[in-house]
Length: 85
Image 1 (cartoon, rainbow, N blue to C red):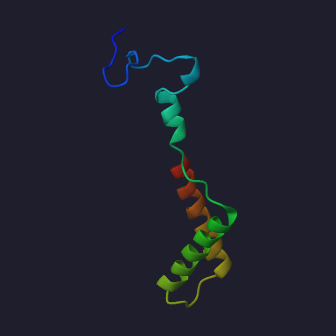
Image 2 (tube, one colour; image 1 turned 180 degrees about the vertical axis):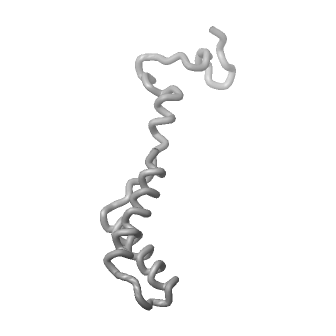
Image 3 (cartoon, one colour; image 1 turned 30 degrees about the horizontal axis):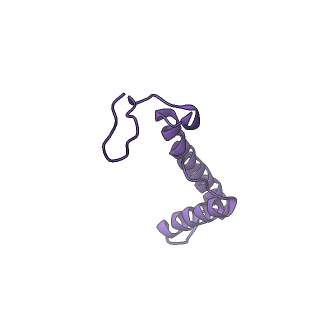
């Protein structure tokens, strides 16, 4: 092993690890990139806003608020599911 002049520590090949660095390779880095978790309150707010926009697009006339909510819930859940994968 060669020594680096600035730190006087031995150089190691990439991907090698020692006892104290177990799991610090690419797999650990990939695991550390996580999709943000959405709370129940945030999900509810997303559904409410989507349902509101749906009603707004038709001028708040006609339609069924429950149907708007259920359709919005499906859309938000699909979006969150895609973001998690």
